[in-house]
Image 1 (cartoon, one colour):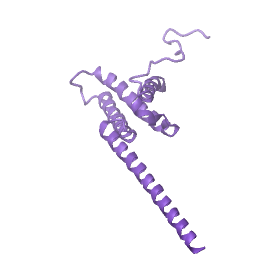
Image 2 (tube, helix red, strand yellow):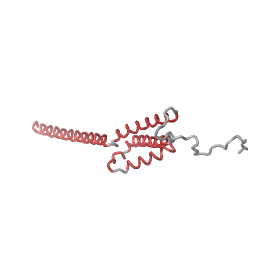
Image 3 (cartoon, helix red, strand yellow):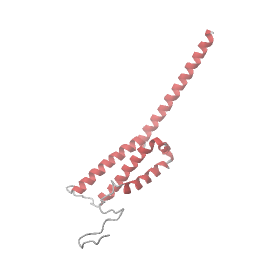
Image 4 (tube, helix red, strand yellow):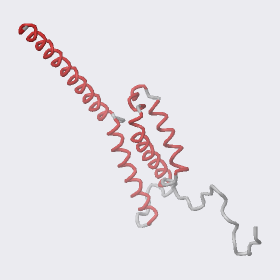
Amino acid sequence: MAELAPWQRPPFEDGNEVALRHGAYSPRKVNPLAAELVEHVLHDPDLGYLAAPSYRPAVWAWAAAEAQCQLLDEHLAQFGPDPDFGDRRVSAAYTAHHKAATRADNARRRLGLDPLSRARLGRDVTAGRANADLVQLLTAERERREAEEGKGCS
């Protein structure tokens, strides 16, 4: 490596976090937190349906939004209980937090991760099963009648 001038600093090493403020947009910070959340949800016996492969992208998107919220909460805590909203960094962090919280809340509802949405999801699943059972019953009855009509004609 070439000799550095007195006013130069050495190059940053791989994995440095010099420019990192809150990490909410850094996969190095978000992904481990999101992975913990996914693991926690997938081991909850009441949420077994989320283990289906078709849910993986939605569960990950929810977990990433929750992780971003956590990182932004930690970042915003440094500004104290009475932040200066005139400070561009503060307002940007609050805006980012609001967007992440909105994404997380919407995903929570879609996945049935809060009590009301879980009840609605359960109701919809039950209604779907009841409809499928009714269709099966009506189909069987129609087939029985067709079989009886077929016997009478021969």
